[in-house]
Structures are given as C-alpha cells and as structure tokens.
Amino acid sequence: MNKGSINKSTTFHTFVAYFHNDMRIDIITVLPEILESPLGHSIIKRAQTKGLVQVQLHHLRDYTTDKHRTVDDYAFGPDAGMVMKIEPIFNVISKLKSERHYDDIIYTSPDGQRLTQQVANGLSIKENIIILCGHYKGIDHRVREHLITREISIGDYVLSGGELAAAIIVDSVVRLIPGVLSDETSALTDSFQDNLLAPPVYTRPAEFNGWKVPEVLTSGNFKAIEKWQMEQALERTKQLRPELLEGLDEDGEID
Ligand code: SAH
Image 1 (cartoon, rainbow, N blue to C red):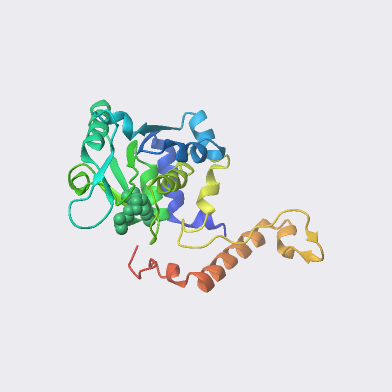
Image 2: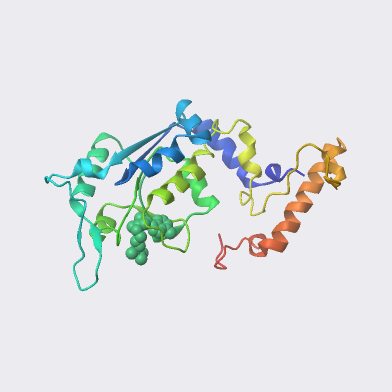
C-alpha cells in the first residue's frame, strides 16, 4: 500500500489544496545576506516565481532611528553579552502589522517549540507570517512577552543567529504548499507525514558493480511494490525510530 494513500495527511492535503491562499512570509533579520542563497534557489525560488509564496526580507537596521543604526545594546545585569534592542523590532513589526493581518509572529529560539513535520504542516496553511531572527544573547524579553505569538526551535543546540533556523522553517513549510512540488503528492510520502520513515529509493541502473536493486522494484507489479514499500517503511521505523510507531515524539510525549 502506498504510504501516502493510507493516512490522514492525504485528507489534510486535499483540504489544503482546495482552500489554499498564496502565502506571505516576512523575515526580520540583521543579516539578510545569509538568507538570500537558501531562498534564491531550487524549490523555494520556483515557489516564489510561480507566485505561490512571497518571501520578504526586512533589514532590522532600516528600522533604527539613531545615526549608528544600532540594533543591540549591553545586557542589564552582570553577564557579558549584547541583546537585541526592542525599538527597531517594535518599529518593523508595527509597520508590517499596519499593512496586513498576521496569523503568527514567530521568534526563532532554542527554547521554542521544536520544529516537526506536524508544525510545518500547520504553518503551511497560514496566510501571513513573520519570522524574527535573533542574534547575540537573544532579544529583549519584552519583545517575546508582547509582540511574539509563537517561538520555534530547530533543535536542541545553539546557533549564532536565527537566519539558518528561519531558512529551515521556510524550506520545510514552502514545499508543502500545493503546487510547489511538481508531483503534488510527493510530500505526502516523505518521512514523518504519517509517523513512518520513508522507504529506500533507487534509480537506474538496476545493477551497478554487482549491487542489485530489490527485484520487486523492477517487476512492474505496482501492488507488490506498494506492499514492499510499506513493509520497508514499517521496518525502518521500527529499527530507527520505534517511538514514532506509538505516535510518540522523541520526548515520549503524545503528538
Ligand atoms: N542565549 C540564547 C541563545 C542565543 S543564540 C539562549 O541560550 O537561549 C542567538 C540567536 O540564534 C537566538 O536569538 C535565536 O534567534 C537563534 N537560535 C539559536 N539557536 C537556535 C535554535 N536551536 N533554533 C532556532 N533559533 C536559534
């Protein structure tokens, strides 16, 4: 059986494909250069060219009011380190909010909600979102208390800035927007969509260096191939990520 054809995700994506509006993602950053390459190539670029998503970068320094275009200042307290100032962040978020409604204003943060396929699915049906990239010791906490609606982490490690995290969030979300991938169902058979890892994939030649692809794949028997893929997906999940089979996440919590 096809991994994609047996799960709730199919229904979810059919629903999304029908009702989806073009998405807009505004990213606030002090280093737009870091984001230009990941956003300017391949699938993400094509999605923008097709008009399925609009990604806008906003340079935080453009929203400062002092001569030196200051975006950071010393942290209060004895600890060394700089903190991103509240005023420019307030200015850019206020300007964006005056132009349209935002479903979520996201701060990339190591202590945020862990990015999973389910989180990406949820974000892919939003219309407008803002992603704020932090730097230094982080951002003035009042921004998080009063302006941010959601915080997302890409994993339990600390990066030097939020730009790479933002690029990963955008990539995982944009490829789910209907019409972005050429074979629209292909996102459905990816790992995690149905709590299963993807089965192995092969391409020609069917034999290289004496190494053969599994015979069933060249049999032309699609029913047998689907059955094999399902068995492989189950087997790999059992071996590599058994907790997924119980519908549990890495921390043993129910998804
Ligand atoms: N002092 C902070 C880390 C600051 S790292 C702490 O200990 O929590 C600088 C910036 O990088 C953060 O403000 C955040 O925007 C980004 N960042 C670092 N690690 C991240 C992660 N795992 N996920 C998402 N963003 C991250």
